[in-house]
Image (cartoon, rainbow, N blue to C red; front, side):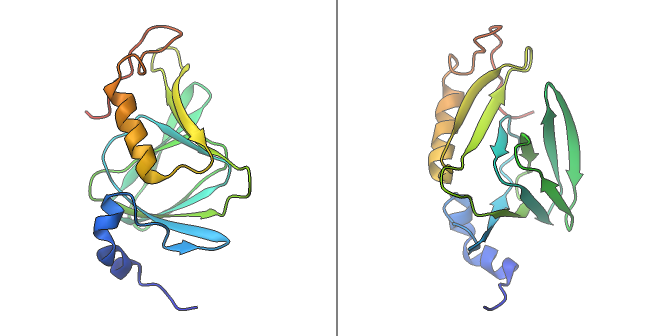
Length: 166
């Protein structure tokens, strides 16, 4: 039951964090994860538990989906923001930013999903989900999705989802 120096922990685990393999900082009734900015993304995370974001270094924006509408929440360094359970959200973390995400431990049978929506008709183009997703497997699945234009093509309207980036 000792305090954790988060900055020291981040420095000591930087390589593993960058590889998506650092594991949680705390893993008990609550889980605390360090997340680093990897740049723009187009997917939305949907989790059955609320997630508390604390931005340690750098500012981020989180895009929230409300049906076909979206809005943005600005989370500057030093700020907290709560992503409600079940709300699709897409944290836009610029490269080099560092955040802490705290969530309740998931119970048996709980799931999470990563969804890509068509920018023209709002249909779901692709989804990765199920039991809590392993970060390394997730990264591989995302790379395979973006490499396959047919997977990025909306079955409802034919729009091809763009890769992340400017």
